[in-house]
Length: 593
Image (cartoon, rainbow, N blue to C red):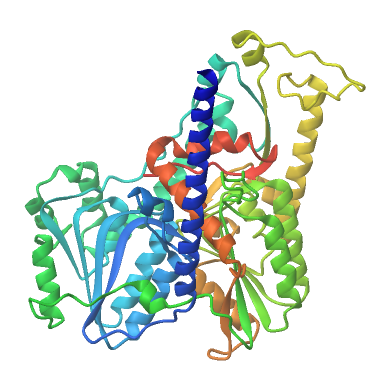
């Protein structure tokens, strides 16, 4: 009987694994088919009286993947939507001059993006408006991020039973120290920088005054910039706009939203469709000619010939923990270094723009990338940085040596500091689980890496010296790159986070602007005239399999974020601490809503 039971169980497991293998094989074949179709496409011609359809939904990534299909989600019926910022900007730019595009329709369904990314989209919509074509926005309910982009439209339409959510910004920081104490887990923290708050939740039970002060400063600056922009677009005074935000405007009936100039008209989705048909001379029984940005943008990864400005994307955490599928979910410093040295040797590459969207990460990886980029600069080619949502800590480390640094007013940067975290499970093992650890060693500090043993004062002092040395090197790199004294850098360092506008005032960045402005500056510096050069994106996504794996990783992460919600960032921080370098140049990613 037992033998029969074991055979049934083993057979079930074998069947399950075979099914999983077949499913994976089919998914990969399907993925390659999609990739092949995507790779073969350029920008497509559109029919007359078409409308560019910008769907604000899901996550916005810096750079579109070779495939954006969510294969796991397609099989499970839980697809996650993501869009490349580069595709949105390129699509809007081409639609502006396309005679077959009559206007822009922004459909708001809950976009997930940070402030600087949203500003880039809003600026691209504003640029499209210069064509004189109509720009309409519609939603059943406007989330604040959606409304920030939609507010620049000619007319804002809302479902008659819909709402607008404008409430300002909040950064919610969870402090798990008491929980860790109860579990018997001690985070042995060593840091340099009064404001280096990424590890603060593991050290104390409440927010420090220094962290509160820096958070209030950048939150207020970012909100002022955004609220002033929305108020100006809607022709409302900033004071009135903020009073509406303070009144929890989401509770207002829709007709009051019209009276307060937050929206222009109320209509149902079918009425919105009929309005667009009338504008574009489409018959009632015909479909609207809606064109996506990706259709107009075409293949942004086509290999260019002749003089080029290289755009090197560095997005995510530097040498972060490996995902469940074995791929890095952030910046691979080795790949960046290899790519930079290839660009040095490429005679067609006349300048480099580094597009940074990173809160930092490995101190070691940051230094390696700094060295490669410094060698690029020494080759005589211009090196320019364009900052996205974040270019902080290690993200600033790799940027500081540039000839010119561009940032958005709502970029978070700085955070020049360094820390180390070594988890200790001694109390958990001995007092909670009843597990004893016995040490046999040849040298006094051979047990330094044993996770169930607390560091000795000597070991702690040695680690602190190592952290201090890293901070000295970090601030020297910044001082040399910005052509100032190291002492002056230390005054604005200490791990403090600055918004882009404040960073401009203290000299951490040179100019407000986005990727487009950075490319133009780099080309001018290289003495390249308009029309005589092209841009080429790097790293080169030649590996379809690698692109597929990264796409699947991003989709899995997006799904995990949706499931965990508020706790996603803290889950990632905690698991990251257990699976990456002990010494880090990283800022906490504030949960800003």
